[in-house]
Image (cartoon, rainbow, N blue to C red; front, side, top):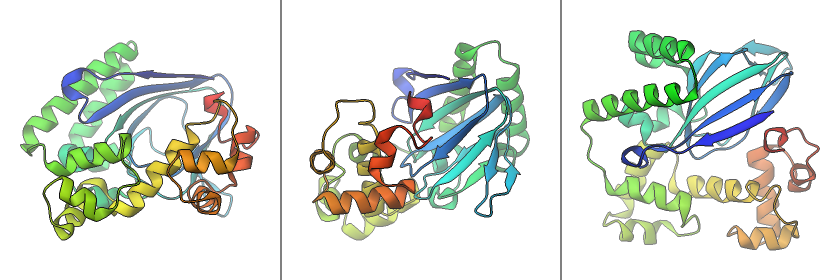
Length: 264
């Protein structure tokens, strides 16, 4: 399996975290765990199906958007596959698709549903692209055009979202709202509109994701890892990890769960 990330151009780095590519020659089951960001995904080779709670597999889309999520979903494919994705900050949902980020929370929506004819044209362009460099260029132009059409200023809450993701997942709501010159009520309302979750739940997911990123790094105890990622103690860490991944952290870090195959 091959996984690659591609940085965005500097003028779009406030909206796009990175582009990514995942390709495989054989069947694969992907664990889509809790995520504080949004993905625009194109299956240019092979088509995944979502595994429902009853064990049945429902056909997924070829192009669509996965909103921020705090639930586990599983997708599977029986053959080789190729996926191109854009990993957006969550405020990309209202900026690019003109709906509240909360409307896509825990939801995977087909691109044609969100953008009608424009979504169909974008999907076709990506499928016909010669390589990933061309796919990046197509999606950069799409993002530029949609941002220009939205005419939404770079609000202070956008900086708060980025800061939580990169630096401050343990700050309380009062401190965050004061840092960005908003009342607590304004901050929570704007945060849910543009991030899709409450600041508290969003911060919990960011802490969880920071813990999963330690996979393949130097092994440490769960207690030390919990403190490193901003948890009060090991029990809170294990509780959140189970809630957001569906498994105990020991299972995840063992490398035998299937959830880390794309990282190996």
